[in-house]
Length: 425
Image (cartoon, rainbow, N blue to C red; front, side):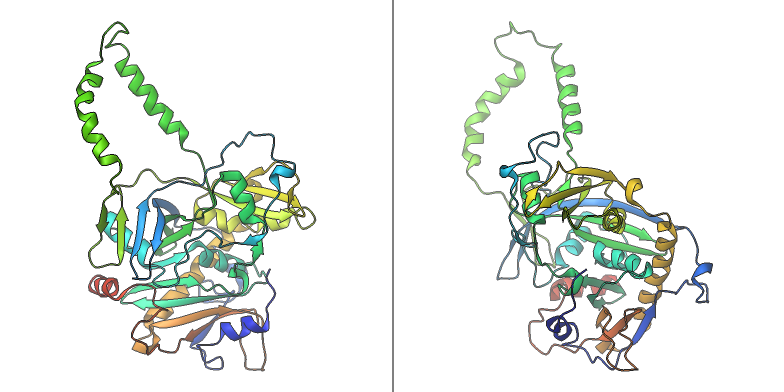
């Protein structure tokens, strides 16, 4: 848990009227018309996470154009059975969580929305967010002590929400990035994934950064075996040329002419997004959650706290990396969801789903145009008797309007916003 500093307080409330919230939400809301949490439903009637596609952000240029590549190089553990994870060669580097990541400081939800509308034009969704928001709802329900701010933008009937890098979403310095580099052999963290989550009555488009992914080598070897089985019996080693190879030779010169050519770039109409390379995604990777802790600070309880991350990302396991002053103390260890999930997690999910519906139903009732941009804050910083920022409320505020020609706080570009307004009305 991050410490709430004076700088955090300044940033949390710098564009809202702290003493004039729109409303607030408590953790005891059940959707059943009463506040007794013991009457809350104990299971989810409708929950499913379906991964849609993976992509890598290649460029987030000054001209506001975002160039992506479908799939890309996934962060896969290079050799999970390697026994040499201990020793000086595994010294972790202490640096910021975001180092090597392409940070989208403007129009941060442009890519997932544009790609989904292009690749899945008939897919319906009510909300666009990240797994951090849904995990926050579960942690709020479970009475954890955290603090977050989420910015909200309403575009027609579509609601977009994303965490702001303050409080527990702040990218503080950590050994996690160093652990990822050792496990995957990669220095960048540009691999992303888009999923659709059915959460109670809401259909939510989720964008997430993928730190680790399961290897998909099994499918590849199956394809190779199939090809070998269907071709080996047709040609003998005595044949001077396989017909396939013979037909290929005349085209080699043509292929060489294209090797040095840059991959074509396709611009998605009505957006600031362009796709470099193939336009059809491969099968999405299965994510793996990761937790990096010092040996002294590790406990099974803080491993258990990662269950919302796993369930909303669709991960089957979490990998823990323990270190002593930056030196890996043991071989990374895997835990399944069943290993770490607390007994009451289904009850938590049901109550979080009811709270999620309550929040977004309220947002949709707001009719004034100056309420299209809001902030949802969870912090224990009560300063006056009337202050509801007591750690027991999620407080919704109206954000002040940006009068500049280019609104850097907008989640999507003006062209995509116009397109969404024609669809989500």
